[in-house]
Amino acid sequence: MTRPVPRKSGSPWLVLAIASAANFLTILDLWVVNIAYPAFERTFAPASLSDVSWILNVYAILLAAFLIPAGRLADSAGRRACFLAGTVLFGVSSLACGFSPGLASLIVARAAQAMAAAMLMPTSLGFVLSAFEPRERGTAIGIWAAVGAAAASSGPVLGGLLMVLSWRWIFFINVPLVLATVVAGALYLPAYEERIRRRIDLLGALLVFGAMALVCTALVEVRDWAPWRTWSTLGAGLLVAAVFVVHVRRHPDPIVAPRLFAARTFRAGAAGIFAYYVGFAMMLVGTTLLLTDHWHFSVLQAAIGIVPGPFTASLVSLFAGRLSARLGARTMVVAGALLFAGAATWLLFLAGTVPDYGVVVLPSFIVWGVANGLIQPTLFAKARAVPSADLASGSAVLTMARQLGSAFGVAGLVAVLGASPAAGLDGLRRSWVMVLATAALTAVAGLWGNEPETPSVVREAREPHAVRDAHDAHPPGAFPSHGE
Image (tube, rainbow, N blue to C red; front, side, top):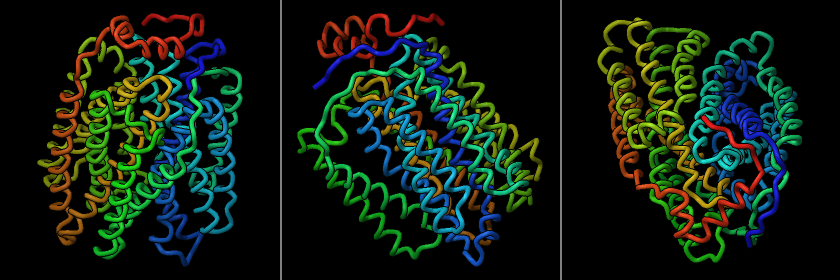
């Protein structure tokens, strides 16, 4: 039962800063570890590359698997409590990673770090959506996304610089930011919020965890496993997912409420995020392989070469809210998809001509950065289509779509490259053709999700529960009004 209570007064911009700091942490640790693989192999010799890859794989798998249970927990127990608990766990597990004496203990610590990140991702976006008035949410989400893009752009370079000291510092660097986030969160995050006391859907939690863990494991191990093992694991994951869908439809209060998908806008947002991130992963990893394997860049040089893309995305994301208000979500997503396709086409026709970074990769990454700045904030803003009491759960679904899309993208790239090991550029070209297909699907999702939005006053008059949700989410005097 919904129980509205007053919330602590505070500036929504402070809430945005705290939520963005958490977003920075979780995205940074997805990127910063990649550059440390050679150091991990030396430290934990005679561990193989396959063994060491689990430092990244366990993070990716458990992050995807725990997002929905963590979102449900946040909506039930309170976003603030879950946010602070997740931040503390992230800091403790980062210290455990840095002090790990062996590979097994490091993998266990990374698993704890992934569970903490799963608590932070949906709650941070949920705070942003609930703290701002509708007219300002686009700008706020754009800033939140820009910080994530900045983390992505700085991660490889920061990791390369910290590696001069030791790989352990790529984990220790989290601790000061965690401490500042915890203190600021305890002081300024809303102390009270709308929540719904719900029964624990343990079976639903186990099913969603099992489905995501099996599917993601099959995708990340596609390079090392025999085909029969990959397909059987993937099939088992899809079967568990089917059982989960049946469970959701029959359970009186399931872990993923069907009402989340009642709005076509939200369904299209999830589909668009999945399609875009399939292409995102293929484009990013494929271009990295072009730089390192074919043009013989060092790992650090390749990391620096990638920076212009996320950096451009972070700049464009800052203005995504205002652009969306003027142009509309449909135009933003379709324009971004066309630019994304243009960036892939540039690589498709020029990558095999001359190994010139300034001519081939740099223009493509700048165009791609603009595309990302238009697409990502616009699609993540679709979380506002869910009821206010389900903001963390809705955010978790969209974030899980991103994780699954990335995993499918990497698996697809491995598949096309494996088909022609002696002709790597041909395999990369095929991957960029697949990126064109994902860009088209992203545009379709943008067009499909453009259902007319009824003005809030009219919508609340038509749907009495919406009045309650709006009042609970923004009680009088909760936050000062800020115009753009």
